Length: 87
Image (cartoon, rainbow, N blue to C red; front, side, top):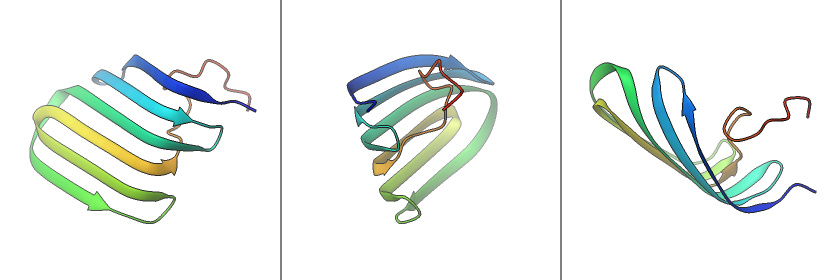
């Protein structure tokens, strides 16, 4: 069983992404937080949702700065700190 108490890192994908995951299992995580600085700027964007594999999700973008978190949701896709793509 894959389980991590804390997982954090940095990805480069159209800008920088810094992420932190608490209580990360194979399919679900307790809390996932991400800050990013995008190459492409946009206006103001705010999205809040629940359901579809998560208890609560929040996304906020202001220009090139972005912030998002998921509470009790599916673990974010591979490439965010996971080197094994075969699972």
